[in-house]
Amino acid sequence: MVLHAAFGGSTNLLLHIPAIAHAAGLKRPAVEDWISVNRRVPRLVSVLPNGPIYHPTVRVFLAGGVPEVMLHLRQLGLLKTDVLTITGKTLGENLDWWEKSERRKRFRELLKQLDGVNADEVIFPPDKARERGLTGTLVFPRGNLAPEGSVVKATAIDPSVVGSDGVYRKEGLARVFVSEKAAMVAIKEGRIKAGDVLVLAGVGPMGTGMEETYQVTGALKHLPFGKHVALLTDARFSGLSTGACLGHIGPEGLAGGPIGKLLDGDVIRIVIDRNRGEGSIDLVGEGERRFTPEEGAKVLASRSTRNDLSPHSALPEDTRLWAALQLASGGTWAGCVYDPDQIIETLQNGRKS
Image (tube, rainbow, N blue to C red; front, side):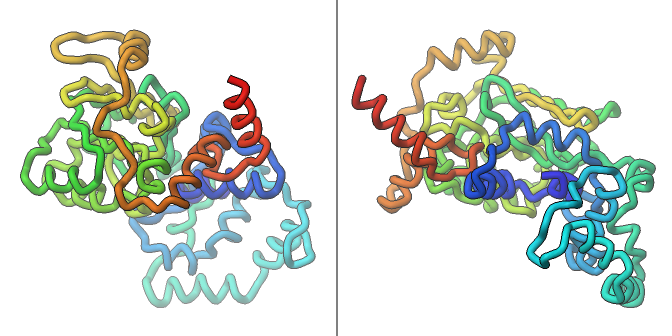
C-alpha cells in the first residue's frame, strides 16, 4: 500500500491488495487504511496520467522502477526492510544490492542517452517531490452516496477546474444510466452537457462482473467540455482514465447502494481536496428542493432501488454466483474474494430467519 501511494496508482490495486491480504491470512485493509496510508506517503513518481511531467511508463522502468522508489521510501522510514523476500535475502539486502548495481547505473545512462531525461526527473527524491508540489494521486471520497467509499485520481482532474486552494468543487444535475452502452449513446447524441454529473450505476460485480468503463472515461477525455463533466460509478476504471471520475462506489447499486437510487435531475455535490487527501460525494437536492448531506441520506434511505437496475442479460451464471458470494464476503472494498466463514455465517443466519 505504501509503494502504491508513492507511485500514485493504479486504482485496480484496490481490488488486488485486499485479495492478496485475504489469501495470506492477513487483515484486509478498509477505506480508512487507504486514506491513512495515502496521507502519510508522498507521491514520488511523475508519469502519465498524473504528471506533473507526463512521462510514459517505460521511463519509470529505466529510472529504476519499484526498487528505486523503495530506496526513497526506506530513507523516509516507511518500509519494513527486515522481511524475507523470494531471493532468500531481506528486502534491505536487496535494496543495498540495487543501489550499487551495474544494472541501475546502466538503465539511468540509457534513459539519459535515449530520451535526454534525468532519472531523478521521473522518480523524484522526496525533497524534490515536495519542491515540485506533488500531492497524493488517490483520494477516497465518502458521503451519503458512497458510505463504504469510492476512489478518484485527484491529480488527473484538469487543474483549470480546481480551486486555488487545491479543492475541486462541483454541484450538478445527475444524468443516470444503467449501462455503459446507454451512456455512450447519450454522449454521441450530445445529450451530456457541461456541468452534468454522469452516473453509471448497476455495473459493479453483480451487474457486469465489475467492468472497466474505459469507453465512457475515454469519451469524456476527448470531449471539448469533458473537464466540466463528472462521472460516478460502481464499476472500475482503466489506468488511462482522467478527470473527475469516481469509481468503486460502495455499496454497489444492485446491492442496495445509494448510487442505485439516484434519479435524473438529482443534485449531486462533489468535493475533492487534493492537498488534504479527502473528499465527499452527496445527494444534496431534488427538483427545486435543497438539503444537507444528512437529510440527503434520509431521502436516499426512503427510496427504492431503480426498477431498471438489473444484471446484464449476458452475465454468465458462474459470474452471478461469484458476485453474490463476494458480496457476502465483504464486497468490492474487501477485494471481491470468497470468505468461507462469512458466507457460511450469512447462509446460517438466513436459514434461521
